[in-house]
Length: 434
Image (cartoon, rainbow, N blue to C red):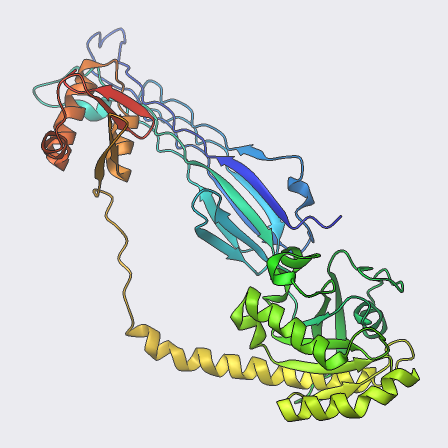
């Protein structure tokens, strides 16, 4: 079974609490506060590796939690940092927020890493709250809660060239002939139930050196694939990363016309993703060792050339024409890569003067009312409330000052909040006026 999708829960470690400690020594009975800070919680990372080919590691394991930060202690000593977690995924994995479907990262290259849950900050010890007029503070911050979220993992194969076509068109046979891959091959539809990859080595088109590219055998597509019919959506996404498509047609099928098959599959590609239909394609009529294919070849060749597609006639089973096809594919791929490099170089100056993205400031917040509860959302305010010891009078006094300075108190009052109403900050609920 080819596991290319998974949903997992990640939880970063909470920050350690700050210490509320006072120095008490033989000759310094009233030495003042010396509580240390809590350690930062561990974060959760995802890292791409070539050592994995599927997401099977996440079939049964769905929850991952990083280590919590240790609390601060006496003599201004900080707590230890929580242990990070690094989860490995195959190269080609796309990571999205499961709730919002927001794209978090697309890990393509070996060693690429992204943080998916940030560890909470450690709380400040009471030594930070001492002033000239308040020399014995009883306040110390709680550790910030670590981020947590459900994320969706989706693997898209990284291949330069993709083989597409109807089931039983001979894609797996061609892959086995031109690469060292050994896919399952049989004469019935949907033999290939999972993508197969192989590496093709041919002469370098430009310099004569060996030139290699990755060839992917995508499971057979049928009419209605864009709507999920057959294997549909399960494997259409694997075609998205390819730069070039080899469109295999069955020249010996009695039930279907090869050119009609070509148009049908292209329509499915267009409906699934318009950019897929614009990929360069090589039309290939397979099974030329059979009389039926030989009869159909002149008409198909005329259709393809009229439409502007390069066209080849091969027999994958007897290796007829396969070397010429791979040489042409390598040459075309080399041209495509050069075109991409030129477009990137040309876009550098354009992007340099383009739109500048300015992230939302941390002080930004929103106030809304849902089911009788006032909800305040904002990164800084949620952190301030989450790190306040609600049982500590000094801490609550400081929180009220913070809310007033940020303008949250005024905004809530303008929204109609009254004494006794419930106000929610992240996961913390408070009664207004307490």
